[in-house]
Length: 330
Image: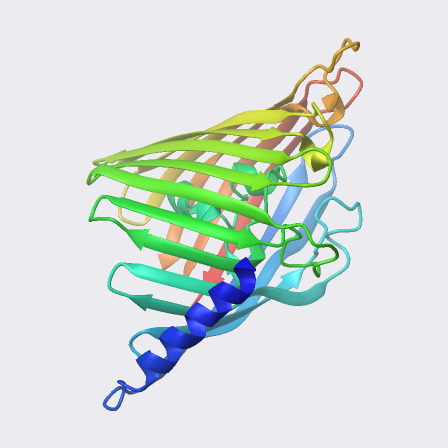
């Protein structure tokens, strides 16, 4: 019932809005982003040097009226980053494809939409072309999904958002009748302080999946500091299999075009009853990213950085790399 109601609301709003756009000139702009890198391993288990194209996005943002816009964005990459062949095969699929209505402090988007939770953290982290935000990187949720998102700004400092999505992500079709529901609120107490709380509820006939997250970020002068906590309960709807972790990151602006940055991630899983080790020990660990970035042009930036992964499992080798990452965007 919820999906037909949301669709009806959007259609009714659209009919009313389009009748009042006699003197509006539609406009649009292309979207293009390319992430590529060269990296070299620093450990005996992986000392290869490789050129990679992580992602290429191409699309268009079209504003058809003061209240209505549409975005379509193709993602040329691998839909399954967990595969050992993920960086070899390339597929083109929709990352975003939605229509958005916005008026005053209210907006609603329907289609393949970007999840607000990821946008807030990624914007503050600021280095998506180098690494995904914590929730996206460690699969605590989907950065984009098929469904509808409603957002409302209560005032200049507080906004709320809610969504109903299929929970399958943007690279898969809906294969069952399950839906996931999200709710989040963002608070900017002062100009430089931002807080974010988020919840994702995934009901099922068996166990329910839940995601809880909190984020705080602070900017002052040339320095920014961010920290987040994420908790995933009943991973993949398996009772008691929980994951949780922390991410801390900071950036310092040296000059107008130079920055240094660092990030530290901790990923853990719980110990199930009757066992002695965490259920997901092979994927538990810590990660460090640290480097320098040069902004050569408003559309081009390059970073030289160090990245590693230290597993909590004693029998798994650690990884360490030197990266040169490049982002080009329009």
